[in-house]
Amino acid sequence: MGKMADIDEMMYSCGLEILHPGGIEKTDEMARMCEMGKGKRVLDIGSGKGVTACYLAQKYGCEVVGVDLSERMVKYAKEMAKRKGLDHRVSFRLADAHNLPFEDESFDIVLAECTTVLLDKEKVFLEFLRVLKPGGYIGDLEMIWKKSPPKELVDKVYKVWEGFRTMTLEEWKEFFEKIGMVEVKTVDFSEMIPDMEKAIRKELGLKGIVKMAFKLLLRPDLRKAMDEYRKIFNDYRDYIGYGYVVGRKKSH
Image 1 (tube, rainbow, N blue to C red):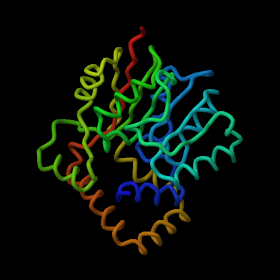
Image 2 (tube, rainbow, N blue to C red):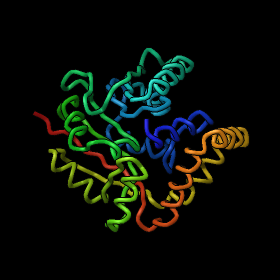
Image 3 (tube, rainbow, N blue to C red):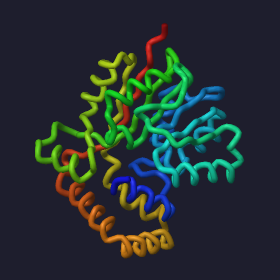
Image 4 (cartoon, rainbow, N blue to C red):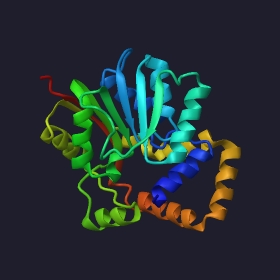
């Protein structure tokens, strides 16, 4: 497992639940645009601690299946669903998004957050389309380029963030349309990035911050990686943004 996944797990273990600006409100906003509702069957890609899956099942009464490549995250997510009394509507599986273990046309909605930028987009989106019912929605919330980035930045994040590749929202829209999605919409919420660190500190609280400091003391490799990530955000703040894209699969 790479450093980015290790950092995510470390932050989750310290009490952080959502790893993008805007928190669960932005996730919810994207879900509503995908016509989330009772009776819908939802696939949550890169489900992590299971926060999104449990939230959506609780709020909308839908059935959610989460997949993740981390055994620890799948175990944690299952425990969370059980604690919340949602294990009858929420389930989690260890699975690779490039090769989903589901039948064709078995979901109404496929959601991904901060995940597809690290995957083979052509391959995973064909998988999303395969398991998605005609007329169903794909929603993807990711780090984006606010404007076309210099090659040095593209190369740097690909190396430091272990295969990271993203696009501008216009390019994301074009990509969705290229794979056959219709009614494609994009939302840019890059303006929320400056509040992200403050929100993380608030969510972690003193106990979580102390816990994280101790963990980083024991893992100098993760401390170095976090410093590198922070430097990229600071040095290239004019280019790094956040947004989501939603599209509908054509009906037969």
